[in-house]
Amino acid sequence: MKFERMFSPGKIGNMAVKNRLIVPPMLTEYAAEDGKLTERYIRYYEEKAKGGWGLIICEDNSVDPHGGGFKNVAGLWDDAFMAMHEELTDRVHKYGAKIAVQVYHAGRESDSSITGVKPVAPSAIPDPTERETPHELTINEIKVLTEEFAQAIYRAKNAGYDAAELHGAHGYLINQFVSPFSNKRTDEYGGNIMNRLRFPLEIITRSQELAGDDFPIIYRISADEMVEGGLTIEDTKVIAQMLEEAGIAALHVSAGVYKSGAIVSAPSAAKTAPFSDYALQIRKLLKIPVFTVDKIVYPYVAESLLKEGKADFIAMGRASIADPELPNKVREGRMEEILPCIGCWQGCQGKIAEQEPVSCLVNPRTGKENTHTVIKTDEKKKIMVIGGGPAGMEAAIVAAKRGHDVTIYDKADRLGGQWLLAAVPPGKEMLNSFTVWQKGELARNGVRIELNCEVTPALVDLEHPDEIIYAAGATPVVPPIPGADGYNVCTANDILSGKRDLTGDAVVIGGGLVGAETAEHIAVHNHMVTIVEMLPEIAAEMPDAPKVFLMESLERNKVAMYTNTKVLKITEKGVTVETADGTKDIPAGMVVMAIGSRPNKSLADALSEKYRVTIVGDADKVGKALDGIMNAYDTALAI
Ligand code: SF4
Image 1 (spheres, rainbow, N blue to C red):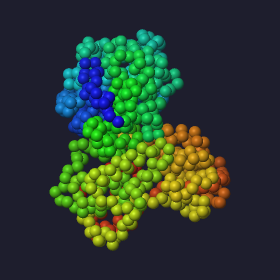
Image 2: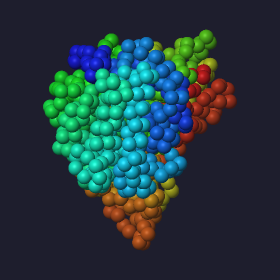
Image 3: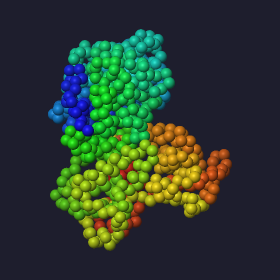
Image 4: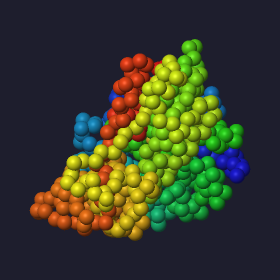
């Protein structure tokens, strides 16, 4: 595919953009708690400018000291912040990218534990996810906020931003005014669509007075809020036309609010480009450019959306986190080098949900651009990496890039380890794209690969490495339940690897992530499945959005789920469990163990008597792939 559309220049108002690729605003939590930008924040955006993106829209900057919905939200409410904003825009402009800033106020999608004050909103109705009843804004307070938005946009212009984006989506304050879901007022800011739109229209008018009507204002909108009583695409079509008449320069079409938030940053199980049809419908009515966003990972999809006329610009958020250099790699035909976002949610949205700075499972350098650069070593070492799962491969890639002599060993006939099994359940196929990238990087960086090779102390003595990185993963645990050694019992790994046929109805013992996804895999292959979990929750460790998709799939596929339930015994006919209501027999042809795993450390312990051994990934501590890969990356950087 030629990427002609993608690399054709575009215009947003009077702002010329060198290509059609946009980094949309995504909170990073790299700003300081007082709203100031940090070097980490600037460096993160600078990296994207260097990578070839046409327009970078920086994350939500609050217009008011109490306007943030998170702890470390950047601010544009104070002239004291200007120097760092100027530094940011200067550094981004050096690479020919344009830079905009999103201005926002969280309104009722915040709470007093974050801001120290009661949240505000058009009406005193709590957000269903935040639950704190907000203060209903008076007319005078609305006027103050209008001025704050306009002043923030004026500061943005003075700081060298090429445009500003008003965050009118995702249930934040502006969206709260526009939507009947959250606005129940009966004064001039409520009731009909003209009144509900008054707040953003007054912001736009006042901003144009201050910054000039040639300073481009982009408006981000939720085309469909996907909540009962909320805005639908038909409402949004009208709103879009009114905003265009008011003089906005472009419309950035997203969807959803906090209550419907699983789709806002769609996980791997969601369909590709889920909001592009909304963008198309709106684009047909407007003359200004329209952006589409969400789960657009592959450049081929971006080009196809542009060709089809679904949007004028393509916003690729998480794809830009996974690989800030994506545009340059596409332009230079280095497609296989693009590090793909796998929709896992572990590092980006998952961290934000925990109020922590963003990181990325596939790109451990995210947010550490200053400190985690791979620098060539002066002291070349011979390194054995034992275990070819994602952590082992990551360590091998980084060590080889640093100039070490690296060989990776795995006892299996292919690289990938248990990651390959994690990619088997429905909606998890994107995980394989990371394996393909890692294998490519091993080859591109000259790592020797020894498969079907069980490493022994004798082999290590023969090779006599300077360092060993031990990444042998973990082994599934089989608990001492009576009957666990029966012919009808297997592990989740046996099922996902295809070692065991699917025969009859199944009981999956263990409802963590692996158990729940294995149950889904079995269910979509037309077997009845029951999950038995001792804890009160299924897939408790899973990030929000992927979990919403998984739970919907389990329900759709009629998977029975028992929580707070203990397995007493396994028989040829199934399992006997103890629930809060007493014991119960669940018939099953196959019983699948998904209780967890334990690290494979024994060889590492033996080798560490003679060699310098660093254990990484699950072999060190069974946990999230994000942490294992990060740990492997850091280890290889330090050697
Ligand atoms: Fe994509 Fe996962 Fe990285 Fe987020 S953490 S950008 S979902 S690969």
